[in-house]
Length: 182
Image (spheres, rainbow, N blue to C red):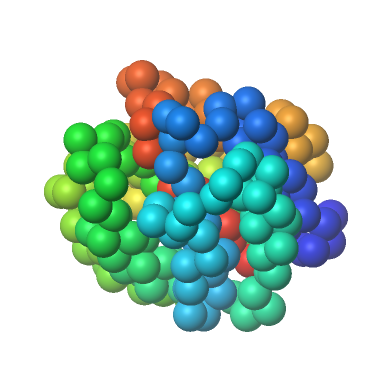
């Protein structure tokens, strides 16, 4: 499967999650990450309705360069820190990757630990076979939050996989979806 096709499928999966769960119980943020991850949708962004959020997700462009997982985790930590709305909310970071990042493993571990210390549950999804198991395992809050799926899964199946992992432990309040370059 071509990288752009996978990216389009991931955006569709996120839109399906928004359709199913809405915006009253879940706050969304999206960071497509390449060499320099940039937040495209923040927890603080206000959308008048679900369709406007889905349009914003649809408009996200796939970064062309390989992802830097350490920088992504740093950006995510900043998002959670800046989010003043609902400080009581559970925090979940969903990292979706299809290949090894350009980061050093120890830097990834250190940055992931900072998020975990702040109470962020980290779920990692590996699509395909080109990812680095050590890298993704070092990110997750526990091994039960590591999902491996073939790239040819339908968007509906991916959306269900994502939410099954997120809801493990009854976490349904705050959701940060990360999209890696595919």
